[in-house]
Each structure stands twice: as C-alpha cells, then as structure tokens.
Image (cartoon, rainbow, N blue to C red; front, side, top):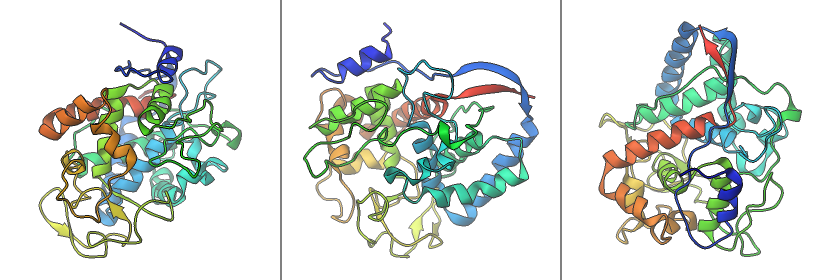
Length: 330
C-alpha cells in the first residue's frame, strides 16, 4: 500500500503512527558527466582524510543536513524541493543554526573537489558520509552517484527543515520557518513531521537515529552536551579494528562510550540505567522506546546489530538520494 507525501504529513498531525514508504524525489538521468575512475579516486582520497583526522562523524552530519532539507510535497522544478544537492555549501544555508560547525566539514572535503573537479560536491558529501560509516565498522551502503549540484545561493533551502532534539523555550519542538511546519508539543510527532515531509517513515526514523552511536554533540553547535567528557577529553577511544586513538578534536558529549565505532550501542544504551551519566540521552532518543510506532524497531535494533545494519543501510541510501537529480556515470 502506498501513501502520498501529503498523506504522510496529514498522519503526522494525528495520533497513530505507521511506517511510511520511501520517496527519493530523484529526476531522470541526463548526459554523462563523471567517470567511475574519478569516483574511485575521490573515494580513496576520502578514506585517507578520515584515517588521518578521524572526522567520519562530522562528515555524516554534513551529508545528512544537506539531504535532510528535502520536502517531497514540493513539485516545482528541481532543485526547489531541496535535498542532497550540496546547497549546504552556500550562504545562507551553511549559516543556519542547525548547521553550526559544518563549514569546517566542507573545508575538509575541498581538496577532494580540487583533485576530482568532475565529481559533484553533492556526491562528495554523500560519499564521505557512507565511507565514514563503513570505516567505523558499519554497513556498506549501496550508494548511487552522479548527483547534480545546486549552483547558487538562491537554491538554498529555508532554515527550519531539520529536527530538534529537545523542546525550545516555549515547550514545543520545531518551528514554522521551513517549507512546512514541524511544530509539535511531543518529540515523537515533531520527528514525524520532519521525516514524513522527506518521505521517510517510522522504521527509517528509528534506524537513522541509531547513527548517534557515531560521534558527539557540541554545546557550541547544537546547544547540547558538555564542553568535554571523560570519553572525549583526549584520552584514547576505540576504533572499529579494536585499536585505539587519541587523534581527535577534544570536546563534546557522546551517546556511547566507543563513539568512533558504528554499531547498535546507541539502542542498548538508551534504556540502560547503569550507563555513565556523562553519556547523552536526549528527549529525541528516549521517545524511540516510548512511542508505540517507534518502540518495536528500537527494541529490534537493540537486540540485533544485524537487523539494525540492514534497516540502517536502506534508510541511509534513501536519505542520500532525496531530491537528487542524477546524471549517468561513464
């Protein structure tokens, strides 16, 4: 059974959750523009950057905040609906409150664009995200490349399309400044208003939330988290291969102890009352185990890393293609 984006958003104002279908919003292919050899070269260069800087988490955030602006209800000509179009590299979008700190992530990837100019920024951003996940021990994502870039600041999405982790001063989540209102008194229905607008459903919301196992929150970016914790104060932290590293930027609060490893620890930590008090457990995390629509998926992922990876890889791929227009690869 299929649902329109309008129906998904209508459901987000109700009281009963369901799993919605995916809607990538991709356009038909056009002419050849990028070679597979260039994509391979870009991928290899991104791997080297991540190995050197341990910057995988911020690259995931960059890609998500680019693609997460998509509004599947907008039928105007591409790229009006937003999405994975690399508009985040332009002002004013890069200066949106939710994107604090991401200008540095764009700069990290500039050498890749300089070395492989025929690879779009949109492909580089999404490639870096998927590569970071895989290098941290996460699933290999079946990525599609050939994205076309937004070309000017007037193609930026409005501020307000991304989710809030905590309620604002007025006691509500979200706002009205984006392409559709995301205001709600409850965290769970705010999340639905954001992700249903993209064309994603309950399983995707929970699976994508699991990526919080990878990385940290910073008070000077999201307004959440501590200046640093015992897990992020420069002491060695675990990598996916079992080794440890202290080569990372000090600061921030993680959701899990081994925050450079991608697994289902996020789900096993949220409901564990014995976990360290310095680990984050935000409202948007806790609702995954309380809401009737989210809870079955959260419990499933807590029990099985394999099930989490399967759902996550599918959801990540869908998110990475939202609003994209693809050209064929030579």
